[in-house]
Image 1 (cartoon, rainbow, N blue to C red):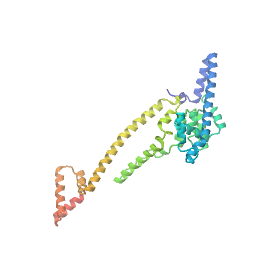
Image 2: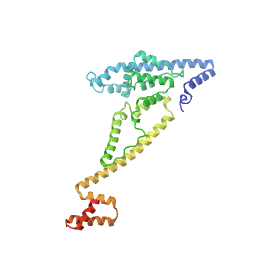
Image 3: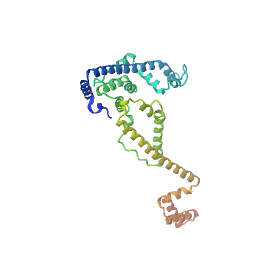
Image 4: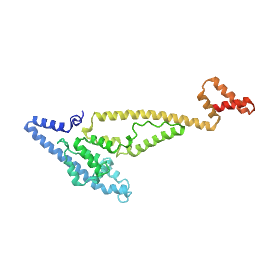
Length: 312
């Protein structure tokens, strides 16, 4: 089920809420008001409590990052998290929330309503905002979310497109065509280095892994668009796995070829000759030419044989 804000916009949501409220009887309206108050209080409580948690572990986190664990010991955040049965990212996100905003600011944000007059800024929205480096960026993204009535996932997409799009700068350019074996090897190694770096530093890190980010989503963020993206990701990763395996097998085969040729240099000439002419008659002509060249005899026959080998 897609979010109504995608198709109707902020005004559409507010209009529909007003319409539904008008159709309610007095008893149901009373329950609605009570529930709205509960959700408002719960939203504020969640955000403010997360901020307090961040303040509580601020010293621990900074000691781990800047002081090399001199006061609290190494892996202090991880050890604390063990007792809460939570991923360390829960504490780290709370720390960054406290670092980015004051208590008064988070209380104000918790009571901020978007332009639809209904949706409030949630902790999921703040998790997206604290990923930005500067106060100016956070403020600009917040304004966009309030005006556009973004879900937390939509806010994340907005932030990625506006502030995290470095990897898209080369989109549309054709990959360079390598002209030598060394260029092919260098190009493929560069791809491997990039993948290994991102995998080790980002995707395999529990703080920013796919599993962590999906588990953090609110129920409202589970939609058809997410299903399509995960389907595409899983499919293309499997294709990449297959094609990377083929490139690995190709590299292994060429490695063995080069190693054997280094042990028997004559195979280099023979291998090149076979790759250009693969029939038995040509192969026998190659053997005859090689024997004439190795005989060392002077004369037109030997020179002709040498020229034939050189063309090979």
